[in-house]
Length: 345
Length: 204
Image 1 (spheres, one colour):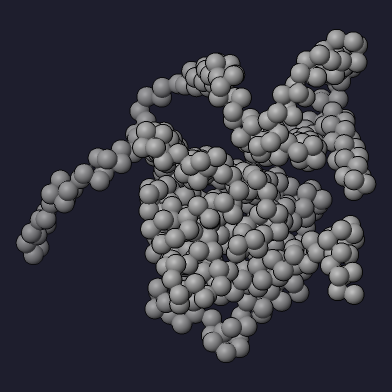
Image 2 (cartoon, chains in turn blue, purple):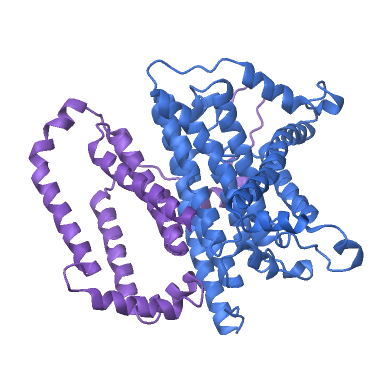
């Protein structure tokens, strides 16, 4: 019977479809729960920075707050402005949310724990993260409102600019690893924590993290969101769950970029010390801890830094990060080539 | 195998349909969005034949960068639908001619008309040799050895185009005050402020 079942799930196309669906659910459901709790953690961290308590009323320690907020968003009325392009207006938040989710297909959670172990994993991540722009730009245009449109242009320009430097960061990582497969990237960093790539590539790690902040429209680059002075940018016209999807997509993107940082620079599922008590902890826990650390830094920056002015933001992206990362690519290639450290392929 | 065939027909049909919609749809913004859909499905077709690297590059370059800029420009146009329809018949012959030329080129390349089949066969033979490694490596190996000079020339062409665009749009505006970050950081307390003791009722 069990042999039959194994055969059904490995050879029959229906069985394979069921397996794939189950894998997708196994990734998506924990991801959505962590998105919900990320909003809670975010608010708690800001509260501590500002010497407040943060959400503490709904449930013990305010733990049910994310669900209360979610429920509120679901129950509110979705308003579609009469002059808006209704179809695109509704599709835009879905695109934002979906692109944040589909990228997880190639993220390795542990040795072999990955839905699609494709050879071009890094490129896939880069491709998908560059699609996030469309949700924003379509939202801005479909709203048929000048605030939303200007906000959309602003944030699209910002995301496109910082993608360039992220691209160069990815290139240095793949130069050091010699593979585009994310599992190979992690395996190349095995051993003690000083084998992780963040140490030899420290400037690139910093550039990656700052670009990740800009990619996800977080402080100090949250011009798209700046509620107070720029009327909330591209989602001015959005309400209820259409806004909720943008919000969830933003948080899912933050978690995704943290996961990318963990895989590329912090050794993915590897434990920092490859010895007995540490190796008993499953890899997925280490991976989650690394993501959680990066997410904490996300909240921390939001709690402490003021907002950039738009021209300063563009200057940082094009005049500082682009030349530095380009130079670092050349430097890394030269060091690997002449130092004899080129990874075997 | 059946699933693959099914996927191929779905992607191919959507590619062709969205390609047609690019031309047919009245609103240029829809055209660009359909173009993006066409790019996507073309990428999926590349994936189906195992060309994963090209598929990803197609998405990154065309969907992630080029189409965004298209969308930027098109969205800022003041769209007048009636005016847009007027030129349709005038441009139809030119467009049709370009289409025919492209189709003929593809057919020639595929060897339908008797020529070109030799090159395809040669390529297939080459392909079989390099397929032992994954296709990012395979492309890298030919691109940086056999086609190295052509690759460099392509790079230079792009660079020239870029410089050209900058030269065309560069204008020096007088009276613009630039932020000099270095100067700002190097400013000290002594340069920036003076402490004045103001006597009571004396004023500064």
